[in-house]
Image (cartoon, rainbow, N blue to C red; front, top):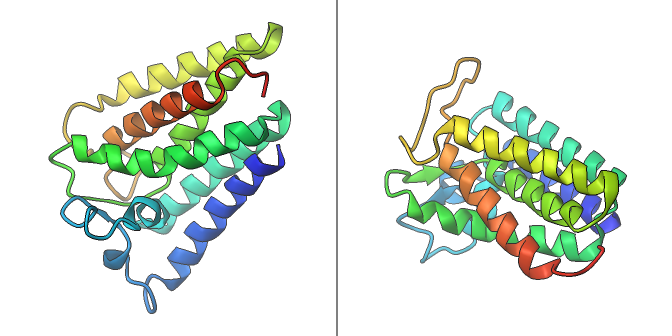
Length: 190
């Protein structure tokens, strides 16, 4: 549980720090995910998730970090689950290359979807209520992804959002989290 909540706190703190430094010290263009630069500047596989295009965008993802921390506190995912989520972080960003129309990206939402997928894998391997909870969260994640039509347009304008969203990032994160969860949590209670 401690590793999981530490990862949640680190993601939130680093995203907040990036937002505070964005205007003067560290412009977003130097650290956001950019398809043309990712192979020459691989740090963007990590830092791209820390860039947010507005305060609303950042606050929504900070709320997501809090939700994942609370889920981790309640379900005690353990170090292997945290490691799976940590590895899924850059894989989420790497997966964005599969959406050729997405040239730039910023935000934690894909990485947060990876965390949810890791928790689903972990909970599914448990018994009773925890397995049922994992199935319910997994079904909710699947329905959310399908409703966003992630294989459609690379960016979407959504009512209530002040920035366009990139649904493919959510799919990429969920796939990376599922893959890492299946590989690292196979057969283990935690």
